[in-house]
Length: 415
Ligand code: GDD
Ligand code: GTP
Image 1 (cartoon, rainbow, N blue to C red):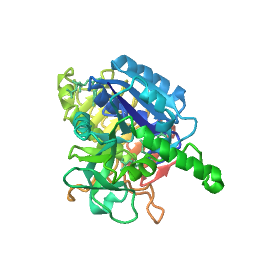
Image 2: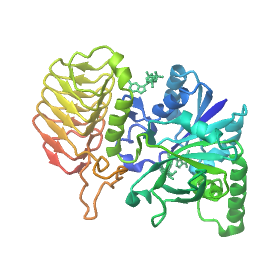
Image 3: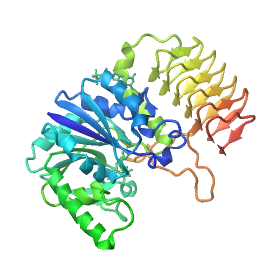
Image 4: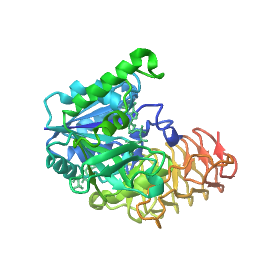
């Protein structure tokens, strides 16, 4: 029997994902028609030995209840949400809920960061782990550029055994281009190592040398992975599958494109759409689309959306119950719930994809503003309930919820 744990953080995290996370917690933001972490659940549920998925976070149970109940209906796996009483870090929550994870004595458990998207090769990762009897943790690793690698956990492996000799979380200077993807298989004995780290942290905390923060706080990367390096208990499997973090709003469009491609086969079998579709497109069955609209590539359209005559949408996500009026254009944008785009309006953003000319480049998680205080070009985002009037242009802008615009905007945040 196997289990899986998904770490989703809490309302304090995911700030770079604003304003998309204002209405919906980031882990539930729909990508390719499914909440972000449903893609994780889907990947875990595919392994029939996986009997339970525990989602650990600091969001209130209220916010997660509907999602958990939907997931329970859709997948034949036990799915539970465990709320941390305070953000305990990537290791603290895991350690706090260790008895829940150990219950039933699973052979191993997957640990997944909720803020990554990938073609999760869980079966291969498990096999790799099982082939190494001393392994407590196997990390899924991938190659990054030298320059970008320092923004991730960096690992140096013993070439023949693939044991990790050296692990540094977000190093100050270059260590290795092999980075941690935030996807792991762990043996239950890892909790012994965690107990030792926890004890050490407690000693420091109560001797008065502790920093501010919670005594239960623990970093999985710094307090568990780093000390395991060089002990033949930590291994890394390098993959070339598609993988990316989901940190900024711009990464939603990038993730959308890749998840759509991954689920292509399924879309083919769906009922033929009534308008001109350029694949890949996810169209919710309750969306109404005029036959003269042209949609795609890489578009997801949510429930109850209404798309009128002559509309053109590409590389975008349109959330539930939005309306795109006649002949409007939407490109590299996210249109929020209940928002409305007027006739002949143009809503356009700039893609923030990884540099295609650099092998192994990842997405740059560019901050909202550059050093001289100007908005960095990125996707355009319309918050929920925003109204864009007819015949206006909105370029590389972010509009906070419920704003009724009266004119065109370029490179602005409209509060
Ligand atoms: N439950 C819970 N509680 N989850 C948390 C907490 C917490 O206090 N803090 C963070 N998380 C979750 C986040 O929601 C995210 O899914 C995951 O843990 C990682 O959190 P970050 O702290 O944002 O780390 P990171 O994404 O910058 O770096 C991690 O992931 C990279 C790959 O994406 C590290 O593991 C890196 O080594 C790795 O390269
Ligand atoms: P594959 O053989 O890899 O396709 O997996 P599968 O046959 O086990 O499942 P499939 O991909 O056909 O999809 C079934 C489940 O995937 C349903 O629960 C869908 O809701 C969900 N799903 C996952 N990703 C997507 C997506 O991008 N779009 C849509 N519409 N559904 C998705």
